[in-house]
Amino acid sequence: MKFTEAKAEFINQWGILGSQWGVNRTMAQVHALLLVASTPLSTDDVMEQLNISRGNANMNIRELIDWQLVQKTLIAGDRKEYFTAEKDIWKVATRIMYQRKKRELDPMVETLSKLADIEGDKKNADVKAFTETIANIQKFTGHAEKTLDTVIKAEENWFFSSFMKMIK
Amino acid sequence: MKFTEAKAEFINQWGILGSQWGVNRTMAQVHALLLVASTPLSTDDVMEQLNISRGNANMNIRELIDWQLVQKTLIAGDRKEYFTAEKDIWKVATRIMYQRKKRELDPMVETLSKLADIEGDKKNADVKAFTETIANIQKFTGHAEKTLDTVIKAEENWFFSSFMKMIK
DNA sequence: TTTAACTTTCAATAAATTTTGAAAATTAAA
DNA sequence: TTTAATTTTCAAAATTTATTGAAAGTTAAA
Picture 1 (cartoon, chains in turn red, brown, blue, yellow):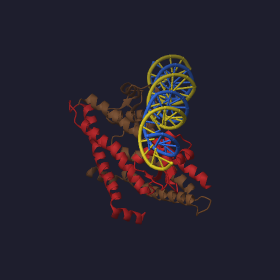
Picture 2 (picture 1 turned 90 degrees about the horizontal axis):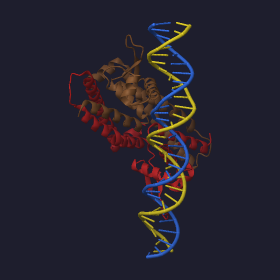
Picture 3 (picture 1 turned 60 degrees about the horizontal axis):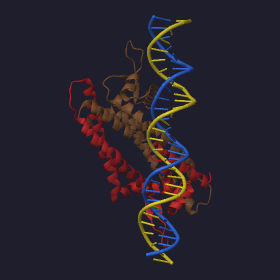
């Protein structure tokens, strides 16, 4: 397989994966493009390589920066903004975990605690089934939160991080 | 908060969570409805409680069965089909992991190995950057596959499963 | 300042996804 | 068998989500 072909295929697959996980396909493609880029890219580079409009490119690059997966880079003597992706895949993974935890798991935990104690007949089968399910999900999400925090913290810890690089 | 209100809120939130993870909102809502149901529900029950059409209800119930999150249940003397959701949240989680691994991670691993060795100048910076990123993602997905397999296998193992229930 | 390069916004449009509902297919009781 | 209940399918319609592109906003060089 040729380089150009392989690169296109990677961008395409990363886009598909993203959309299966509720991420805008184009955002995932921009991410893929920057992941394999050997130099920082400008908005125009992204527009050209992915055949997308300026607005679209801009929006998705901002979103990637918001997710802490992409950084602005300055190039001396150039007024344009350039962008680079975090290339350490373990960091990429923990950052995605962190963001999704913050945006999705945390609010769900919040909601569950509101739903946990409801008024009404505790002996009613429907009420009982509901309360039990909510309690079980609460227990589970509690474990998930702890686990994620541990994994995310581990990445921030230089010792563990180095250790991971050793065994990786 | 009243029971009816809480139930509606749970179904709603579960639907939102699903859509954030690339799952059809209605499929997640049907799942939520069955998760908190005290008895098996028929297609008509689902239609009525979620205000959706027969085709929609049917399609999403089938999909949930395909994901092994919902089962057909027979009720003696009734011709209709009834449905129940798996209520053990740990099982729910491992089944979702299993399905997503099979449908998304496994194909990605396949693709990556195709992209791993490309023709062309190994000294070219672009080629080098591409090859390195692919190799890193491969290493990462390799770990992810192993970890997921361990977690999924653990659920199938009666001893570990009982142990989990103890500490949960 | 002005000017021009560059970035951001957002209403209109396009594309993708979901939902409907009625017809076709299936199944089991009569 | 027939008949009627039930499930499935799928083209058309509705809804949701993503994209465009040009105007407005911003920034820094001249």
